Image (cartoon, rainbow, N blue to C red; front, side):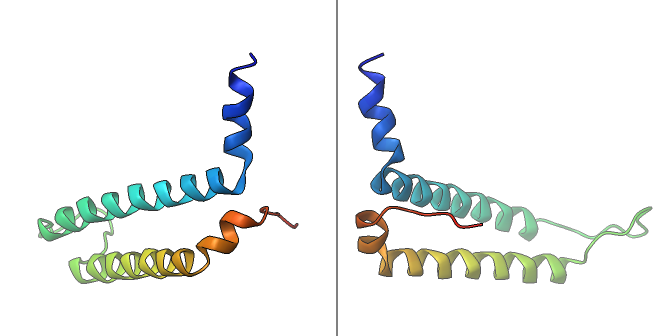
Length: 92
């Protein structure tokens, strides 16, 4: 149990939280790349039995999501020092 405490403490620090956030953003970016490939292979059915978005709507939504992730990544890079040096607080 004594060995797990320092590792747990690292996860509670601002650096650990920042590293996890960047890791999650990297995973999201990889998933968006895969999604872009899937959208590229998407063909609309002739007469669907249910309502589905068009290819153009999917491309626009994908582009917006990639743009939002890029914006968040740039903001994280700009404020990396503050995010690592100060404790994170959640206010309700």
